[in-house]
Image (cartoon, rainbow, N blue to C red; front, side, top):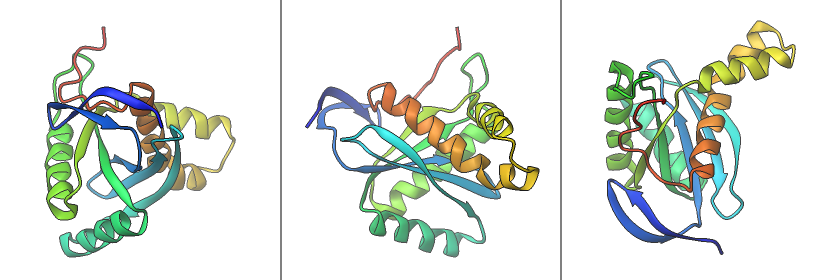
Length: 165
């Protein structure tokens, strides 16, 4: 099994074996894109889009997701500005991540998701799908792109992503 010498969880560096299943979250107020990855394999794949209904329904969904998929952590995408400053949406994503962690008892990492939706739109456009089919896949593909970047970066949280330069 691969080892990561120091991984940041909640800002604290700890030695951690890279194992388990993780979920990447492309946060949205209406729809949440979800991707899954096995840390041992290091490959993320789209899972589904979840259409939010109410806090109670959302809680039931994410508890079930964590249990049924045997998740060991969540990675929530942070939509930050090009200069690295947080946006209103990134503050909402952090709030959602905190809620998710409290709800499931699982650790939550945050990772820069700049350009993931644009990249997902380009990929889906190149696939020549109908607008309806592109929209149905967009958020989960954006979550997959973000989760893949997280894995490529050594599965390390980005508490403050920083300037694009």
